[in-house]
Image 1 (cartoon, rainbow, N blue to C red):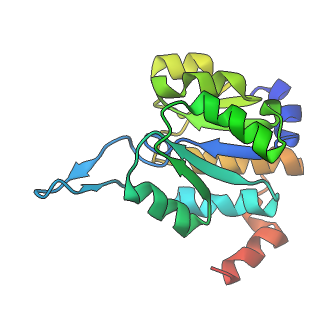
Image 2: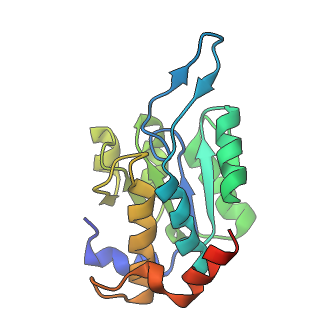
Amino acid sequence: MLEKSLHSVIRGLELVVFDFDGVFTTNQVIVDENGMEAVICNRSDGLAFRLLKAEKLPAMILSTEVNPVVQARARKLKLECVSGCPDKGRLLRQLSEEKGIELGKMAFVGNDANDLEALEIVGVGVAVGDAYPEAKAAAKWVLNARGGRGAIRELCETVFRVRRNLKGNESPWLSPDVRKTYASS
């Protein structure tokens, strides 16, 4: 549940950073007989990035894992991606300097112990619904939806609603600038 006190922070966001495993995915991995890994991502979550784009709110992926599937998903969604990052807090500080974006104007979405510092140092630390207890405790906002099961869509729709001052029954998907993106898919 999003507290009203976070609305002003969300309106001022300049970057949303997502962990990959456990946020884009269910935190499970499929391994074939050759040792090749595969994960399952949610198409509805992918579609939701249109809402952030309509808000001109950049998003990126930051992952500890070095796995081609992370880069492939980032390319498909046209998101910047940094993988093989063991210290997410340090990298967020570096991004803050390089991009000229204050940490307080960033959101980070995570699910596990390696996300704790990142969740704590940004303006809006967000944990998916099935995050580990430590991640939920570190977050300012805990989503209802689980990782790989609509968490990204919940976040994107909520951010869009807050930034556009939409009422509860108004659909973000009916906004003309969002509807235009359907033709460009």
